[in-house]
Image (cartoon, rainbow, N blue to C red; front, side):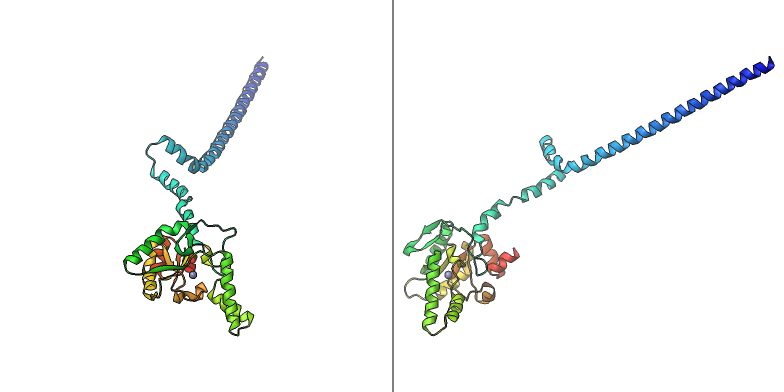
Length: 272
Ligand SMILES: [Zn+2]
């Protein structure tokens, strides 16, 4: 019986050991599962945080603005650049800063609404009020300004060019030399500011010497949005000889900047 008892105990002991091993295995499996689940949860939450962070700069300003009555400083900083991408006043100024020269012909399909002046002159309707004021102020100071040339049609510009070429040819120039010389004095049709309706050749009434008027205009026209377009010291840049009578409307802001910095329109537009 002793042997049987021993056998039985040994058997029970083996059973218990097997049971313990099974439990240990179960615990290990449960632990592994727990670690796996924990890992999955962490990985998932990590993935969720990332897109939330990326999305916040886009969604925050609108949602915060909608909820909060007092926007926080970062929100204000974020909304400011959005407003700056719509420079509406700058776009409106484009018409008065159009560059027309030998390298920059008149924009394709260019049209302009003209205002009729005295002695069959026409200007861009939008510059008329300031032009009138400039002339009124000049007259108050004793000058007698007169517009000699203003808006020119493309055909008129061609007529002027042809007349200059003919004049040179009649004085013995070859056609090529006549054209070359004429082109230093007259803008090639399609490249004249006069075709914009923003340029004026100003002289004086009758036989009055225009020199003092031109000086006054050179120093004061910027107050009305005009500039001396072809200054003596900028002929290499403008490509046009010194024209003390030719004034161009660019608007008050640009005119003041151009006058005070002493640049010509080409330089101003390049550095803007
Ligand atoms: Zn002119």
